Length: 521
Image (cartoon, rainbow, N blue to C red; front, side, top):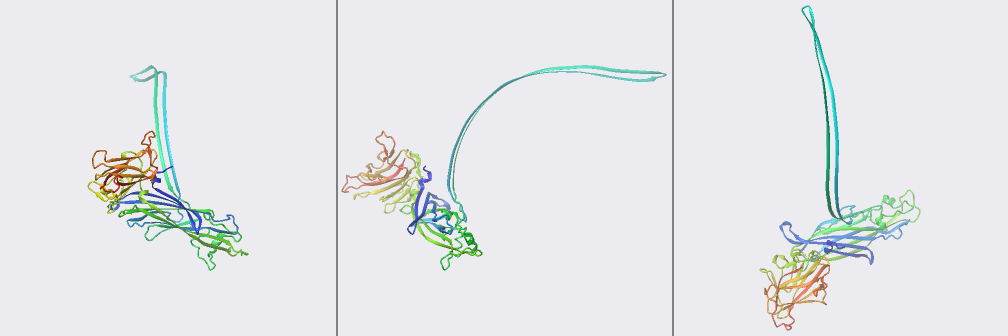
């Protein structure tokens, strides 16, 4: 059921309320992708925000089979999506939007298929043949000649001839044997995934426009047939719409009233989408957030026959009107830093869920207040902190002065888990910078009733394991005393408070803390 994109998606459905009445619904989906924008030979953190909005308004017509009038049906709707931010470091650019033109088509569908084939074949052929052939030939020939002449007074004659006979014969015997064996096997598999977005509009039109800064689109949806409300909406002195004769004949024959378009009669559902690139020009101490404002303006129309006898030669006496039902606005607040986090897919130290405090890795390096923000290289851990007043770039170590007045430092570790089976632990590479020990109070997913307490009393490089603290977050061995499962699928948050040991209640001892790295594996 869970899709990979769900970990980076914010989804919400709100009622469209006009003048205190719910007339429909607004469903939105936001998908955030985080990464680095390396265009123009630069390297800055950036987010791509995909927004999909679906506005559904059911029919307001009370009688679908009316003969003399149709009232309060959908005529036009205007909606806009405006991303705004109070953070001056964020620059918003519109990349794409749909639909763009008249009679656009939009729909959302996803198809997946998996197929596998296995086949085996075996063939064996064996045979033999024998042939016996005999042949005889007999032949003969006879040839002769005769001639004559004279010698003196006496005639002479001579002759000759030949006879030949021949015979031939033969016999042949052929034996043949054959043996053929063949084996074969075939194995194959295929997997396919297709996604698409589309929507068909019948008898309605969609027009899109951009603001002057080209940051947000606005769509105007309106009925075009049988009455083009976007062209004919000017009201006369009686506050009725002046319609040309050709449109009046499309709405009535003088005896009965023709209904509006099917979308107006049975209800409308519109899809719109937009994509923005949000660049972080100069990171601030707070997380990158953005507000997306949806504005909806809705119009209904009515048309009926004027009472009285109609002139068959004149256009139908149609009375038409358009009413503005009201405006609706909804703002969604998005935390881009958390929505853009990738989930931790694998367990073990090779999952790249590690944060080392190298200078170039900070989204915001520690300032005078001790606040900082940093992402892991794989963008699967987000860490914020406060109270760390010293950062050494040479060794990448954060330091906090916790005493002698019982001051504290804090960490917030956010990450996402994609399953319910893999086992994870939190590892901290840290030590004390004074003789006094420190304590770590760890609250997992706001469970303040069951905090985890860890003591830190080892100095730097005292031994290979003394500077490593392990906190089990999930151990699925039910027979073990270390069985824990504090994690949930999706976003997990660890709030860590570092302070002096409880044995220093008056804060008389100086206490210091240093942190080099943390990882979840």
